[in-house]
Amino acid sequence: MISLILGLVLLLNTPSVFAEEVTPSPKVTGRFYEQRQEMKEKRENLIEQRKEAVEELKEKKKNLMEQIKEKISKTLLFGARINGELTAINGNTLMVKKEDGNSYTVNVTTDTQLRRRFGGKGELAEFAVGNKVNVVGKWTDENKTSINAKLVRNISVQKLFAAFIGKVTTKNADNFVMETENRGNQTVVFGSAKFINRKEEVITYDNLQVGQRVRVKGMWDKSTNKITEVKEVKNFDLPEKVKRTPSPTVSQ
Image (cartoon, rainbow, N blue to C red):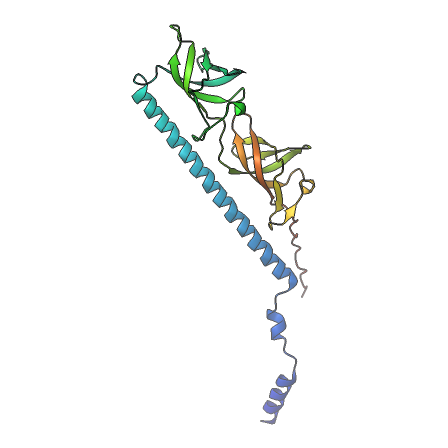
C-alpha cells in the first residue's frame, strides 16, 4: 500500500510529457501548409480545365450549327459561301484561299458584318494573314471568284478571356513564351498585366524565370499562337516550396 501511494505521488510530481508529444513541430505545420497549398493549386487547375472544356464544347456546338445553317440556306439567301485561309489584306479587300487551292477576292463593304470566333463583333484591324475565316455573301462575277461579303467570321480570333497553363521557355523584354500541354508554344504579350505568386501576392516580371509554371488569363489568337490583352499572370513556383528533409532515424 505504501509503495502504491509513493508511486502516485511520483507520478503527480513528474513533469508531463504528453503535451509535448502531441504538439506539432514547425516542420509538421509547414508540411501541412504546403499540402493545403498543393491541394488548392490542383483545385484551381481542375476549375480552369473545366472552363476550357466548356468553351471547346461551345465551339463544337457553334460549328455544328454553322454546318446546319449552311445546308439549309446555301441556295436560299446567299450564293457564295467559302471557308479558307486569309492570304492577303489590301484595304477593304481580302484574299482567301480554300483547301482545294482556289483563291477568292472578298470585298468588305459597309453592309459586311465582321465577327470573331465566338460571334462577338470584330474589326478589320485585328485580321491577320494566316487567320481562318468563314465568308458568306454574293458572287460578283460569273466565274465565281469575287464575293461581296455579307458576313466574315474570323475563327482565329476570340474575345473571350480564357486561362492557359504552361511552363516558361523564353523571356523577352515585353513578352515571354510558354509551352502548354494541349496548344504547344504560346507567345504571351503581357503589357500591363498583373503578376502574382501562388499565394496571390503581387510580384514583378523580373521574378519570372525560365522553367517556372504559370497561368495566363488573356485573349488567344489561334492562328498566330499569341495571347494578348493579358489581365493576370500567376506564378505557381513562387515562393519557392520548402524542400522536405527526412527526419534522422534513431539507431537502437
